[in-house]
Image (cartoon, rainbow, N blue to C red; front, top):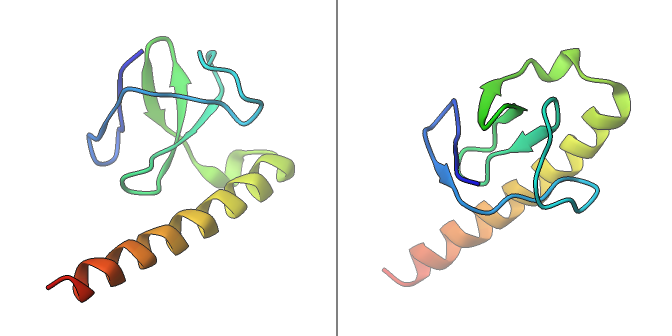
Amino acid sequence: MNTKCPYCNYLATEHETLDNQKNPKDGEISFCINCGEVSEYSGTSLIKVDVNSLDESTKEEIKKIDIAWLKSKGISNLKEKNNE
C-alpha cells in the first residue's frame, strides 16, 4: 500500500500500525516520518486529523513517537552538519 501524507505529500510505501499490523484499517492513525504530522487512514488514502480530537491514550502514544522522531531528526541534522 502506498499513501501520500496530506500535509507534505511524502509518499510512504511501508506502513505499520501501533499494534504491529502491516495493513492499516479505516480510522487508524498515521505519523508521517517526513514531516511529523498525524493523519488518519480512510480507504486507501490518508486524511488530516485534529490530534486534540483523539482519545488520551492515542495522544500519549503520539507524543512518545513525536519525541523519538524529533530526536532522530536532530541527530540526522547534526550528522549532516558534521559532514559539511
